[in-house]
Image (tube, rainbow, N blue to C red; front, top):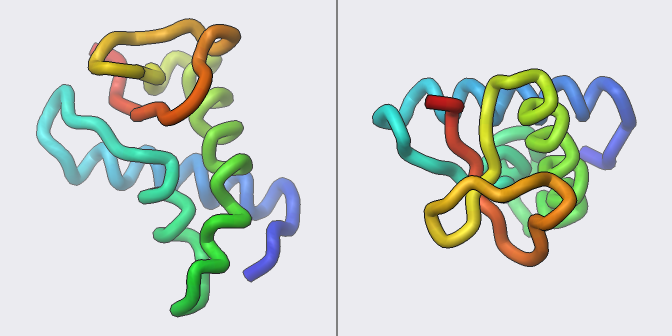
Length: 90
């Protein structure tokens, strides 16, 4: 499934929240988990959804739903560089 804008953005946001709902409180997911959940193929085409998944996580941070962490600590959106994890806000 190629990236198709708003429809994929909403699916990624829902996937992030649903994946977190299935985890223990305080547990994290990787944006790739959401990309894989939304991608409709059996190859590595989910990689094209990585940046949209990171952007979906950022929107959910702004909405107060999740926080982005690095090395287990929350980071500001503008300072997150490299691999991130996503968890529900406490």
